[in-house]
Image (cartoon, rainbow, N blue to C red; front, side, top):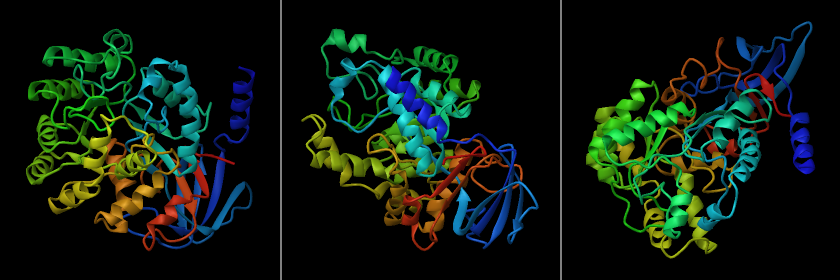
Length: 420
């Protein structure tokens, strides 16, 4: 306990509270990722908000000045798919040996690493009941440094499917059950209400089988159409959206027709499923880094014999879903599935998106304006303008020429607070 307290004290000492007013001198400003860099600028921040953005360098007669005149500055990045309370592992059995409190300790560590990587807002689709919700509160109050967090809590799953507990004896499966499995529209609606009652910002469902779960019955649809429609409609009455883990094409199509906001992964996206996404305004969050992560795990012999064939089948298709989405006019938003790979590497997703057919502008927009719109926060984050939250990052280089410069971020501000 004493060591944990010392570690927490060190973290707090390395973070500064929101200043009354900062003047930030910028070398090259990217205020809106759609428009590119506009050259030197001065940003004024007061009580966590951007109050002015002016061309050139305007040094105030007094007050704090942050000199980033040799850096590129852009809005803080947004990752729509993180798992802050977990680290990469094929040891599924640890769920039966490790108390859930450990997840909170990992989440504190990973929140800081994510913020240091330049991601000032994340969506966390799937965790135990409380770790991500409590981390959301801790980062909002700056008890620990970290990004703004949208937390789903446990995913809704079918019994025995991806997201449910698999791989143990029946009595252990039952003991580790999250309480969010459901069968039939009525029970699924009740689980959505339960998630909302317990603090969920949005709902995560496992609409198809998954790669890393300990069951090998394929990657196609799990929930029935009626169950998914009930989940989406109930969430809508509560003012929250639904994100659907989905690999198989028919599961993607069914989830889109049910009205989910985002498809996570989308591995086997085909033309029919893409057209359903387009027709329903469903956004693809491709999480290409997840495929890189499981490929790295395969090379380390990390996975069980049940998982290995699924890994091999899916990594061969990395990027194809992005190409299909672009061809059919489906909106693509940025998300990585960090936790499947080491936290802090989120920025590597940019080059993978470019390799899959996006140009740098599209990739940058996906992690700022588009991601903010998915969260209904387009007037709060994703751009640098008066009235917006002071979420800013600084780095060397021009991301429109080389997106890999975003893999090394030098300075981060979130809600007007900076890391030292």
